[in-house]
Image (cartoon, rainbow, N blue to C red; front, side, top):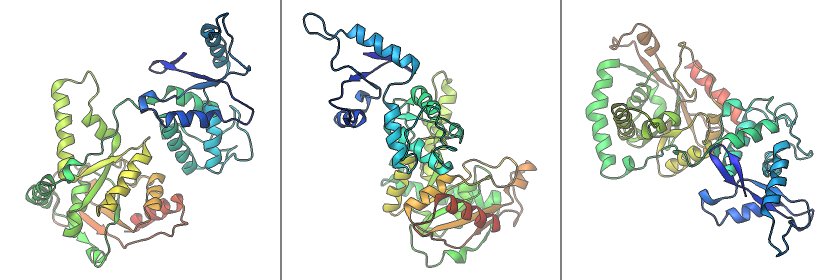
Length: 388
């Protein structure tokens, strides 16, 4: 049978369990393991009777089943997300000793901190193949709210975040390095005239590394690239706003042809020159983390802007917890970097800096113990960059 979903009718499986100990969610997961993504069962209900109502010829009376199931769904969600959510929450270390109800709150009842809510969001995205906005997951969010978000979430058939690889393959990889030295290097030196400080902190460091930096303008990555040693410049990947990259790569319908071509050009140029990959701000974190780990396994260092957006007031924005979570999972050394002077140029609407007006400072390498929490890592890195 079908139910109404955010994109029209969606299939609903109706199950009869063998006994009270049977796990509907586990049965659905076993079935989904052999199905393609677009075929997978995302909604189900449990039929409480020993058997379905049958006709005289022993066929299931589907219309009667549909009416009763839809009646139940109208009063309370029975699509299976409730039981699955109980298992996910228990795996995260919260709610293991209690059963959830629709009014259970993520913060005050389950004691999920901001990082716990991010982990729950990521697990739900994987389980239900939807995109959920981190911003709506507050302490006051209830289980009922989460179920509603799942039902209304953007299905995975929408354009995925881009994780390009073509710019890392020969001969494009060599062309990229040549263009950086021939075009980006002289242009940045002429426009910004940056002073580099702390480059001695980069001596004798083992690569790959994670670099983190405050975010002021769209040329920040070019300044950081220029401040790094040559061996790191050649194998550097930069995390970029995944939502913006996706918009450039897959312009929305209705966008005029010239704008569409302009956005596609921006996408291919930024990928070609700076070897970027998506780091989404709202959803899809696990895929970006996996790509970052794969890049480091292949010898690439990574540059991240932990604020997630360019400053609008001149000061630093709080570092996002996702940076701390990524670094804790990568278990690698981190080097903080700070850029000063660009905000003043931006406020004065100047495009050329005088020598010494722009300063790029490289801090000392830090490696965090495995038991360090994501919150502690993000907080410490923010203090380090502030202190440079």
